[in-house]
Length: 152
Image (spheres, rainbow, N blue to C red):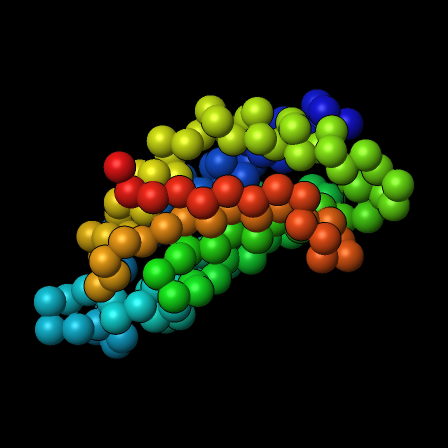
């Protein structure tokens, strides 16, 4: 189980890194202010050139047999990654405290990545203090682990 968790976390980190690159790539005009920045994180995510890139990355990294799905949303000044484990990966009765501990331990190794994404968001979106939130949950919607990161 722990080996699968580490593999899934590695895939998630790849998704996050590619998404951070997408933040710098698009040049569409909709949803932007006079400075050329997106008016909100949600506007960035809904951009017709950015959204397909994000969807393709998620589809590629988290195929139907990965046991996990992902959603990327904007909530105010937060970019939220929500990763949901399937019932096959985390069947009912799984010790979620063990999973939480493993996620927390491994998350410490990628803190700088998420802080960097928050900094990139500040470059392309007109927000004062962008945050990146990473949440893992069960297929039933129960939160296992969540952490919030700020730009450094």
